[in-house]
Image 1 (cartoon, protein in one colour):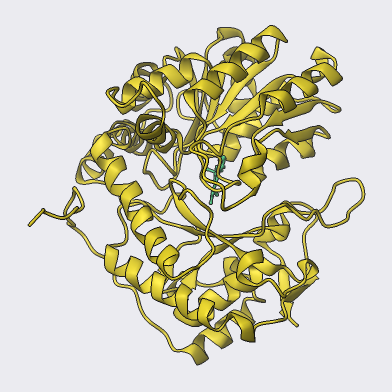
Image 2: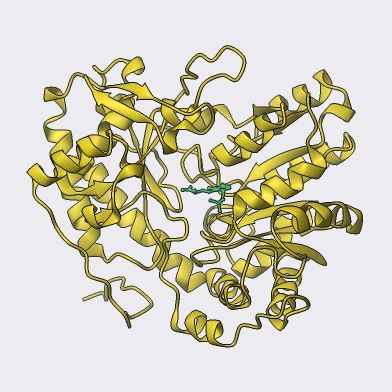
Length: 458
Ligand code: F0G
């Protein structure tokens, strides 16, 4: 018999989770105004809200925490970070920040001015938020294939170079400070960007004097897909692939809560000393001194270890194969999910799941509500709520896709949990024809509303 796949780790510490009844969940969800961000985590059985900051650290990461250096300036933990960032990404300079959006805040304080346009591949919501907050515009140049959930394309995160060219031709260079390549492209489904595409975008941008910034939350998962799917990379290590990806970049913003497998942390990497120096001023104002920037020494140490482990093939293979395991179960049952499967999550196509619910009734959020009621599973909406209102017209922006993301935390759940999730999703799918009405908004914030929005069931 061929030996089956098995996780390349064993579990050393466990945390109890509790099941609940349908009646309890009905009540808790009503108290949360149908917004799962408002639920207490103890009311959730399997938490797929995000893969951000929810991973399980390794024994080696925990041991690194014990030897963190908490000096205000020049801590050895900072030096450790400097060394690994140089080794992995090739950047001489970096600034620690408390998380990814803080890195965006600091870097964009230097680069983004009112009236600027920033092309990219489906900018993440905080990225777009930081751009729009500065009265600049994010322009989505993702390839069209990304918006059809059924087309197989190995690199659905790619930017369309023709769309990007049009941006560079239509706007004066002074108005376009940077292009942001998000690896992997979270918003369009955790889809990777090919090395070829990174290279082409960088070459074109350089010609137009535009900086290339990699939004790097899931850079290692992106490198895994390059190894698996792109010609010429099968024999390269993940670390070699990462090094090449970043050879095309001028800077990176990093949310370390994903591929560095820590609960909190981030940083900015810089190719140019000048940009680092300008950003340092903002880092000191918003985050902390340049050698800790909102992180404690122990956290920086765990982050370094996480960056090293997170760029090992065996770890990534275990991780991404678990996501595939769940995806295959859903596909076998006919559940419409985005294909190919992304790195960190399964994305359910809510418009196909609930074809009868009107787009004004928040289709994807309706499915989020149903999954919680069915099995105590907390997923997240990546649809109209997340897309927010147009800052000018204040009208809802209806994105091409209404998705529900089942984000899989790293090294946290077993495949029995995956079986449970699959059963719950399939049960809702089997009764989908009984759900014809969605939700309406009762209260919302003016920016990034999805975190705090209050909804009512129709
Ligand atoms: N960029 C991407 C691609 C992200 O996915 C995130 C966060 C950020 C930037 C911001 O980083 O949370 O550390 O401030 N994504 C989380 C998610 C929240 O659930 O996908 P942060």
